[in-house]
Amino acid sequence: MKKVLVVMTVAIALTVTLGTVHAADQPLPTAGQTAPTFTLPSQDGSQIALDSFHGKWVVLYFYPKDMTSGCTIEAHNFQRDQAKFDAANAVVLGVSVDTPDSHKQFCTKEGLTFRLLADPQHKVVDEYGSLGHFGPMTIANRNTFLIDPNGKIVKVWTKVDPSHHSEEVLTALSEQKK
Image 1 (cartoon, rainbow, N blue to C red):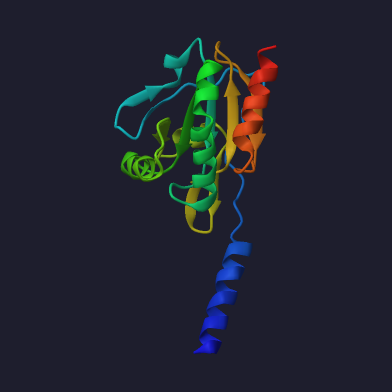
Image 2 (cartoon, rainbow, N blue to C red; image 1 turned 30 degrees about the vertical axis):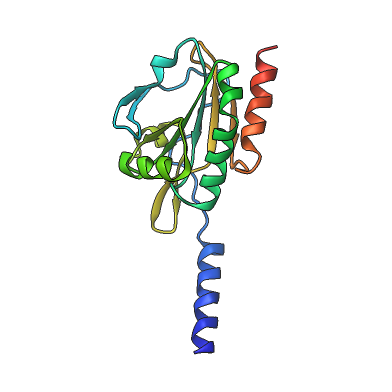
């Protein structure tokens, strides 16, 4: 029994180590570009259009999967800082390839009040250069775009550290508003 557990543990470790996220199919939009527009369903089933936030700052963050450790940490931190984003006239939108039902469960379980957008067809994730693969799974790479009130991308983060990212975005938002 011990040999089987050791082999399984090694196999899992190799899968995690070797199962790296592959690069996106499309290039990432860059600072200075107009943010690609889209409409996606949120956790409550309503259709959310990026254009509807004209006049507000938008934190558009892509994340791999609902209810996983890194994604939960990142979402909790955005939720913790929600009042600061509100005060800065900024809206937080999370996007993954999960379904609206998955987002609804994630929001309910974790107490999330900001919008999570579902892109199971990978259209927006790909358009933002954030389509990735983890082994056989298609996921969104952990990238964030700060979009100004006129719809221009002002900052892009790739491969973010979910434990500190909300603070990084708030700092950049504060610097942009000076």
